[in-house]
Image 1 (cartoon, rainbow, N blue to C red):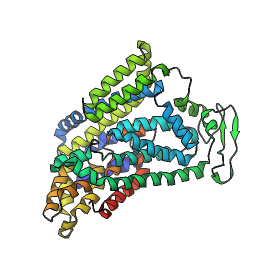
Image 2: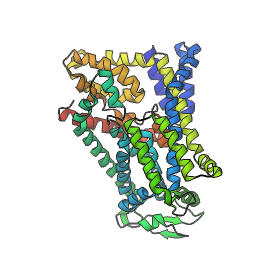
Image 3: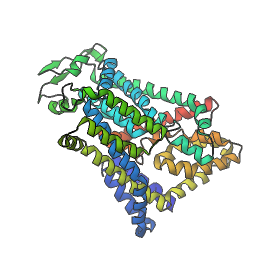
Image 4: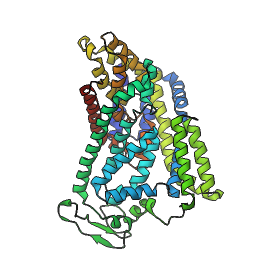
Length: 466
């Protein structure tokens, strides 16, 4: 019964948000509360919620101060050279922009933190997507998939969890997986190229100067067939008609590239760059807990760049919407995860998954684990999968001669899909900053992320890694 209710709760949540019948925050709170009553444990709802909130409070704190920190870094111009560099590479070509998004997300993902990756990637690319009227779900989808592949780094989380759960060395799991992961990353780049070609066909290509220096009432004519030499029609006048978007709003959204904005601090550029590198290094080396690092970093960045109290208040107010939306989503997700775990639904679903595996599949448990990692890491947290499900699967595999190392590597396959799970706080940073509905992001990314996972699994089998 718990198994059926668990799957029903997840399905109800996904259907309602994808059909936009409820907001993600409302769905994350009300649906698990309702199902908690159905299970007959409504009296314990408070305990489950408090336990979930307590477990996610450090994540919420990290996201709050990380948004403030990177928001300040955007304000002072730290990422402007990145945007300019990508623009010069992309030449305002939608295909190159989408590929650049994937490359940027993959590079930034080396810090091992999804939230940081999404904040930097979106802050650098969002103004360009907005200005060229490109699809923002392409931005969020490509960034999520690139980060999902890179999330398998030993300091990213899943590999360390798998190593801990099965008492293995993380390097023994990760290093042999590198060829398969590179194939997966290459697939993301190829997919980005294809999606970029689709955007180029839809929009055409603007010149770099036209993007960076919009002029009053200038209309660029459409070239034939959206080729490299083509131009996309775009009225660039305050209050003029673009493609159904207010031109003034578009200009405001593009202020990330404004070389004359009041918040720029060019004299402090190298201080801010050094502070950011030091912060990311401290994260990777685990010198302090990540929430503490971002708390200290945000306080230092505000104090040095904006010594006057009114200026600090203005910067905090400017980023308050993002902070409230993301932290609110995290605490709402705590209700969902708290009820799933507290009622025993997660354990029941995991046990059912293991029980339905046919006996004849025993020698192929690594393949089974790789396939199961897609839905299981999407519908439950990494902790639930790696510490609750993987040991059971590994034990079943060991009975048929499948080594724990193979099982651990196979368990990493689902990460590109996991990064778009409604239970991953970082995805709300991604969709929130990109101003994309979570349901729209889900509809777009699930099929492509699942395909990426299957490519990694296939490459792992082909190379004899899994």
